[in-house]
Length: 64
Image (cartoon, rainbow, N blue to C red; front, top):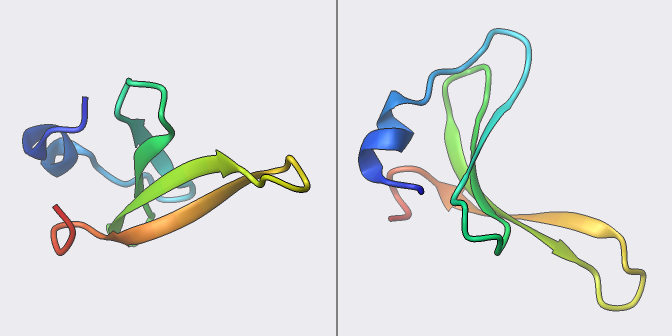
């Protein structure tokens, strides 16, 4: 579950991006970049090519 507390406690690793999924299966997750920046993103399949893609929604805490 993506709660405010869970996102605040998410810490960056020096070399890779960490993902925290919401657990409902709809693809919403938070990316924690090595710089410490946290962004909301959604994974989806493109309707024509059927390839998995990621759409970045915005940066935490500007997007709630």
